[in-house]
Length: 142
Image (cartoon, rainbow, N blue to C red; front, top):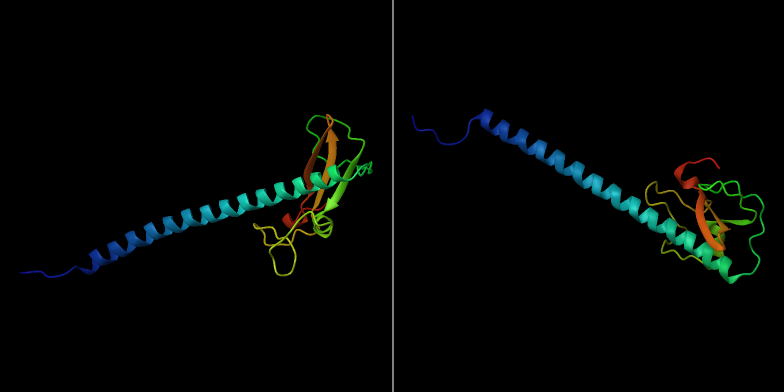
């Protein structure tokens, strides 16, 4: 008997193999997408922190707050002066720019606006540092 074509079992096996390969490819693409979004967020945070430092460097005696408890104190140092900015304040001061039509900056991981997020600038070893101390766009309570 001369057989032309594939049996139903052979076709189902090929379809099952293609489904598994497609599933693995989608997982890989999803992980790459998530990783790139996290990298963009890290770059945004670094840009915000550098903008806050630049503003403090260009204005004299702005480190006036004594509530510096939010700083991630790795060296058990007591910071006597700091300044807390929101992203909205830095945007209004002209230290940040955005390409968004509504004029806001968005967290690229959660897609929430970062306008209420806070960055704290402080002096350590006679050098200015900044760190995001309140990420409301990551659903943190501050």
